[in-house]
Length: 57
Image (tube, rainbow, N blue to C red; front, side, top):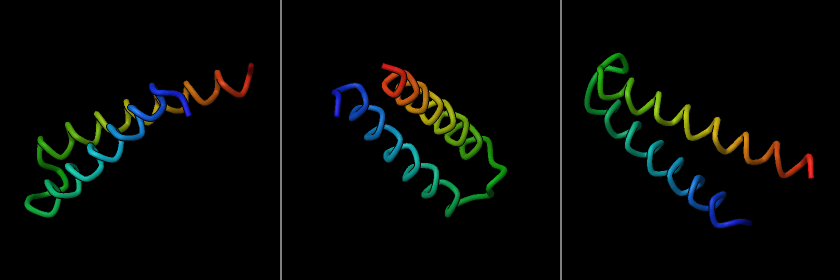
């Protein structure tokens, strides 16, 4: 696994954990939870893009 992929996976897991902790302490519709969710979506999209490029090589 490449370093950037590992970095993304680590960031995805951290963001997911943060989001779950925030959601447990507040509403799923809170601004903080939505911001973390959006960040998680971005990270997942980046990871998917990297995987797509790797498969095409």
